[in-house]
Every structure is written in structure tokens, then in C-alpha cells.
Image 1 (tube, rainbow, N blue to C red):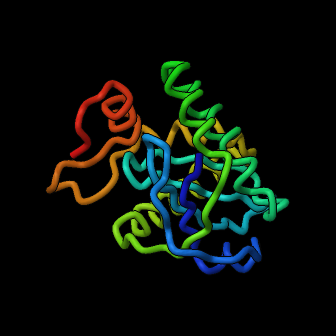
Image 2: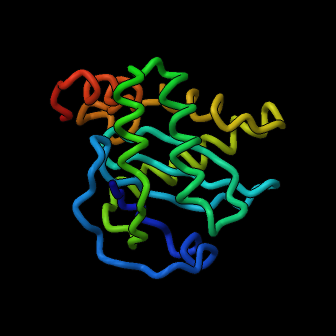
Length: 166
């Protein structure tokens, strides 16, 4: 199985992998968007295009980010009480990655918003627990409020249980 990881330029510069056109992925969650947060330690912030679910994980070593990402995603999905069979099929569909450029402006906007919020949460607590921070942000409303905000954790539940994603 494969998935697309749309990376910002500053992240692609770190990964140094070849950039391709996105392909048809094999996962229910679809494509992911990723950027680098130059904190200490540096983190990767990865946002799901469909649900806006967010996963934080250590950036280094950048070359293995796509291999480590499914493991970090599994931890977040488990913490959100996602059914095991959904998690297993999702993770097994992520054995291969296509690195692509970012294309979806609204997801980029949400990613910037998350980066800003994550920084605020991090500064309050000082320490970084990537899963706890990811969960905190999963309950944050995203996108223009007048359109009906997306709550990533709710959007994930709808997708898992076969509902349509608006």
C-alpha cells in the first residue's frame, strides 16, 4: 500500500528525497501534509487532508520520517479509541510513501494555525509529549467558523464509521 506525503519546501530540504506527483493512495484517510517545526527538539507536524487530524513526531532523522510516521499515527489513533481493524488496515496501507509538493491551500492554512497553537501549548508546559499535544489539537475547531468548523477527532470518527466527510 502507499500514501502521499505533501511536504512544505523547508521539510523537503531536510528529507532530500525525490519529489513526485501524488498517486492514488490505498488508505481511507488519504493524503497527509507535513511541515517542520524548528523547536528544540525539532518536530514534524503532519496533518491529514481529509479529517485535519494532526500527528506530531520528532523530525530527526528526517530521512526516516515516512517510516516512523505510521507508528506515531497508530499511537494517536489508539488514543482516540479508533477501532483496531481500521488502524491495522490504515497502517498496512502505508508501507510506501510518495513525497509530493503541497497543493491544498486550505490544509496549509490549517497546518500553520496548528503550528501556532502547538507552540502556545508547548510553551505553557515546557515539555513535549507528541501524542498528548496531537490529541489536544484534535479537539480544536479548524477552518472558517462560518462554514461550520471541522473538529478533527469528530471528522475521524465519521470517516471510520462510514459516514460522509463534509
